[in-house]
Amino acid sequence: MTIPRSFETLMWKQEGPRLTLTLNRPERLNAFSPAMFRDLGQAVETASKKADVRVVIFTGAGRAFCSGADLTNVSEYRSGAEGDELAHGIRQAQSVFDTVEALPQPTIAAINGHAVGAGLQLALACDFRVAARGAKLGLSDVKIGIVPALGATLRLPPLIGIAKTKELILTGDLISAEEAYRIGLVNLVVEQPSLDGTVGELAEKLSSHAPLAMAAAKELLDSRAPLDEVAAVQSRLIKSADALEGISAFFEKRKPHFTGS
Image (cartoon, rainbow, N blue to C red):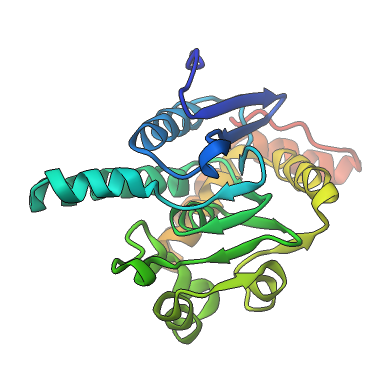
């Protein structure tokens, strides 16, 4: 699988099994443009097929994670697009975050600064969210007369409950990283200088586990699979080379070496 040679709005950096995708429009606080959605979709699709990538990290260049959608582009859509065309464009953007959620590798949102609107919705599509102290998070769409349409209405309630979800969406208020941790929106809050190290440690832990098992666990959890399906998946995994290696390593008291087979 070849790596895309260049992106207009995104940086791709792979270090061993760890891939970092950095939103790269710092002059716009990494606001999502149509080009950024296209770049992210292509990068994620490529990452999903790379066996040597065991964990994917999403972060932002500069002082923000992502400030939301670029309102310049929203204005262009409003003035020029028909209803069906606009809905199709929104669905395409939704599909990018759906692809993030469906990645077989575990994913981490390294929230280095404000994560608002589309930025928070990208983070919600990830498996883990680690926020730097001082970051603000929220869904302020209602304050400009729209709604968060890129997955928050589905992904947020299981994390924080329907009451808190309504509070965040209907008030449009931003909350601190500490408050986000208190309500279960983020997994960890760390000092800004510690963010990269903390995310790196988590990525190292995740990438050391068996890829087939990690992918299966994600799919079972995300689909809320019934127990008969869990049993069927387990019966397949137990026959894998990775399961044999893991069990052997356990009895031999050594670190396992998983190959994803």
